[in-house]
Length: 313
Image (cartoon, rainbow, N blue to C red; front, top):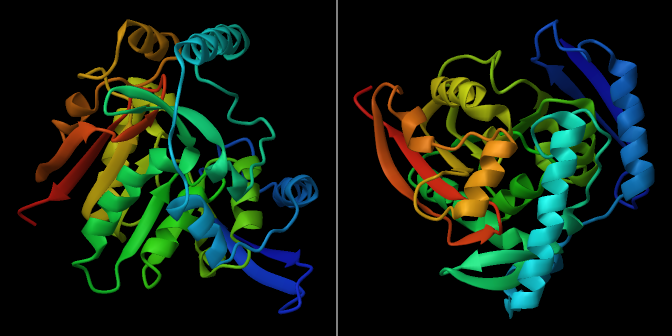
């Protein structure tokens, strides 16, 4: 099932972009087949975000010039208190999870510049949001560097930030991404409208992927499985494993090692999946190539990177 999307872009190089977006969600999904709603979300995203043309300078400014600054104890306490209140509000509003999956939430690639509290080498810092993504992207890059014309899929591509950064790291790699709702895919469409990845976006549910076995070389997720809860995250991990040919990369919370009392409480209250290693045990022909605490993690999100390689196939 496909829908033709036409986006008018105020640019000297072109004024109209046409492409098809595919629907891989089941008919039970509440948005299934309601294409007018998708067009409305794209219109909202364009009005709220505007079109930006990210040049090579964007990479240089964000990645190569960004620095860490010390996060004071007072600042940590203030952020911790705000986070605690946010958790309580989330529980009150949604029961679990940090936000409603169907809320209108449009974000530009400027989110990558956003300053966030970080844990780095067990110390507290303030740094750009993109720092938290580097371990994930570098792990995907290592997978792809030994492959000939690899195909990469991001499960839950959000606003397109990871795809944008990965395209800069691997310009010759075909990078695909999907989202679960119209509101989330709209940001990705607007942000990636000037890139070849625009035609590689589609709609899907990571818990039940309507995709063929081994249809992508590498599948990765970045803080997506966490909000599904342990049971659904386990199903999603199996689906990612099924559609990957060489392996998968995940950056998700875990109770091992780095989570303190507050972080563990937070994961439990929000209904997060909390044990990546437990989920990996039932994957066939699986070799754990890496399982380690993220070099940079956004505090108080406990964060581990796990790299799984398929063997014996």
